[in-house]
Length: 120
Image (cartoon, rainbow, N blue to C red):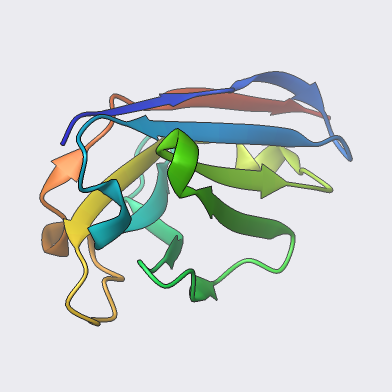
């Protein structure tokens, strides 16, 4: 599976962005997809994941995760953005065997990351 994250950019505080993670491969529907972010000097942070059955475990109430298997795409909708949300955002994939998948080392495939910058 190859992942391509996109949709990042510069946004003012209080604004919204929708990130997309497009995957290659015909078995996309079998994967759990997680979203992480990493700010300079900080560890990679788990934001949430969506299972192959579209169960969502979201750790940030302002963010919503959804998937469209027909488009091999997972979305991260981010609302009410704050300057502290500034980071590189990554999507990651793992074949879904019903695990929690809330740690980076549980994922087998990673996208290249997309920069999100929130100005105050």
